[in-house]
Image (tube, rainbow, N blue to C red; front, side, top):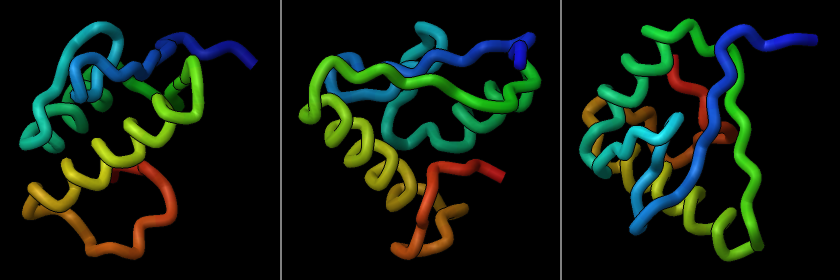
Amino acid sequence: MSNKNPVLLSVVDGKMCINGITFERDELRESKEYLQSIGAEEAFFYPENDEELEELHDIVHKMGAASPESAGDEATSYYLN
């Protein structure tokens, strides 16, 4: 399967980066709009270690907590609808 719009996630200075664009913790909506604008269907995250994986998990939860769009603490994925 070929993804015509690959999305690469990374963590830089405690912030989520998507394709090299850094999003602050209060920019959940902006990150969602960016993903929609490029027609993203899936994202790839290749952590260097377990700590980086945990850091992204924490960032996503903090972004959700800071967003009025958040659906609560029961999120089972990072799907942005």
